Amino acid sequence: MNWSVWRTSARTKRSCPPSISPRVTPQAVREVPPPRKSLRLQGKSVLPTDNTADQQQLPAPDAIQDTCRKTPGPLPMDAINTEEGSPLPPALLELCSEKPAEEKVNLRLKEYRSVLKGMTLQEDGVAKVVHKRVMSVALHAGVSHILAAAGDYMGHVGLWNPGASWGDDGVLVFKPHTRAVYDIEEGLKTFDFLSEDCSTLVVGAWHGDVAVVDRRTPGTGHESLFRLGSEYPVRCVSVHPRHKQYFVAAQGREVKIYDLRFLNAKAVTELTGHTLGTNSARFSPGAGNRVLTTCNDHHLRIYNISEMNEVCPVLISIRHNMDTGRWLSRLSAEWDPKQEKCFVVGSLEQPRRVQVFHQGGQLLHSFRSPQHLSTVLSLTTFHPTRNTLLGGNSSGHLHLFTD
Image 1 (cartoon, helix red, strand yellow):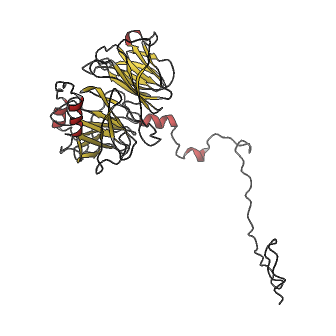
Image 2 (cartoon, one colour):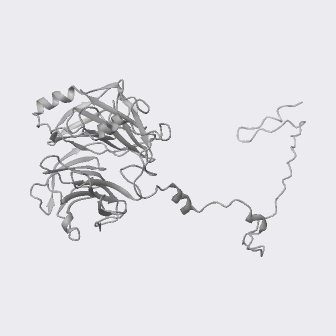
Image 3 (cartoon, rainbow, N blue to C red):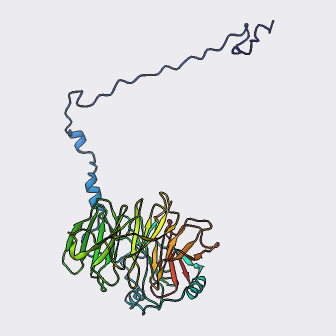
């Protein structure tokens, strides 16, 4: 056989030798189903027949949502990680009723730094408290024992007393909500107490509303309701520590101070300079002459509101990475109740840390623990009187730094 006939030039495709015919593969015959027609095109009734009437009917979406909602009114405090019908531990009730200690005197910065350096994170200072991503954290003001609380993305609330024998290693989990616990549900985003006995509070909603609620009033309604300037969610409200008629609201790019006595009038003060949405705005403890804001434009800002002018420019701006993405809770800076000129905020830097700043912009301390801290603590808060710092991450864990 002359194989030169089979060889082709580089510009042509290779073919089979002349004496070999290519194999022909028979194609399978595909059956084409008839085109589907709707009952309307077939001229048939769309009403259910006797055959379909017996089939199980799916509930409407509104009905499904109604079954998930909690019954209005007081809810029983039944932990879901204990036996059904088990009462709350008497030691927990005693701890919750403990009165807070007297406030500590502000320390000098050198002494304050020394206190921060003495606060560490140990193995028993980390616990799984809620099921999903932590959306809010708090520390009880009692001093005899530490009682930490966290709310998660699915409506769980966890109470943790390190070293306690109840629940799961001192953790009791409740399910009072059906949505993320920023602090409430049904469109409510944030709140702060107006009175020392916690009977009245101001509430901010997703649709730009602010309401005043009194727990002593029968029913589940509000005392007054006011729509702020826009329909952006009210992400944070903070009541002035001394003059309770004033509250600051973070809504979209706007941060304004309002007077509860004149909600129909315009804001008392506007805090300018935010170029993206804000996460929080907090009055400073004590005198309340500063406001700390956390903004998604990667800046922490502090405003001097001593004079309550119509427009307050920023006093100082601190660059801080806020790119938490989709799966992490947004960072939120919080004042230290014991040191009114200092505040704490989570960080995205590696190795993972929590940072404490002075209101002048100076970084005072970074809490780190290579052995026990490997995640971002988006939500942080200081204890009102003890040298204790609490942080929560996106897997439901709480971390305690203490002396």
